[in-house]
Image (cartoon, rainbow, N blue to C red; front, top):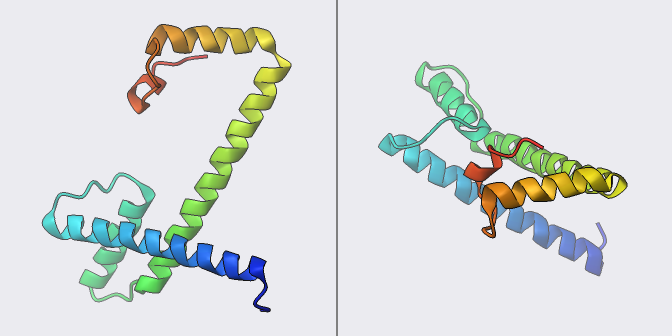
Amino acid sequence: FLPTKENKRQKELNRKIISLLKNIIEKREKEMQLGIAKNDDLLGILLESNKNHLDHGDKGMTREEVLEEFQLFYLAGQETTSVLLTWTMVMLSMYPSWQTRAREEVLQVCGKNVPSFDSLSHLKT
């Protein structure tokens, strides 16, 4: 609660994260209203489910509750991804032969291009 440099920085970062997430939610809600939204991810499913509850007169989630749920999914997903990438780097450093196999496969599939989401699905190693 003290206005230390660390606490001020933490509050500012939290405000930025909330602002970014609100923008993502608002954009998705607009897409849903226009009928062009793809509801194939957690945010889409959450918003669609909440909309269905509200449309049928049930008590849905407030905008703040939707934001909190989305923030939880977003941050948990980032943490999970960073842990996975860290473990991958550790394991590849422990097993250089696998590191070589993985590098050769990436070069074979992607060439000198940066891997894309589409090319990642073709990587087996």
